[in-house]
Amino acid sequence: MHGYVHHGYQSLIRRSGTIDIPPGEVVDLLGFITSMALHASLETVELAGKRVPESEVATRRPPGFE
Image (tube, rainbow, N blue to C red):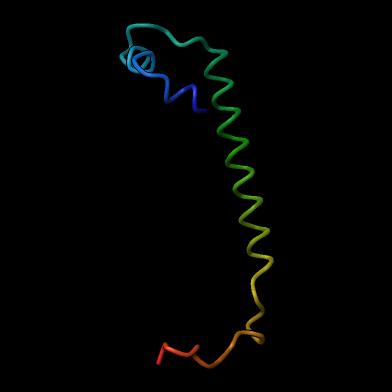
């Protein structure tokens, strides 16, 4: 992903519309984005499963928060 964004003037030329981006490169980028979205979703589900049950949540405030 870094190469698509942070390689200087080449990224400006590519975004200017004066050259065509090869379809294979678009497919690679979409595949990468999809895999990152899937990974983030799985991590979110895992974190949600690690939540402290409501019955175990402390009911009093910690010192200094009164």
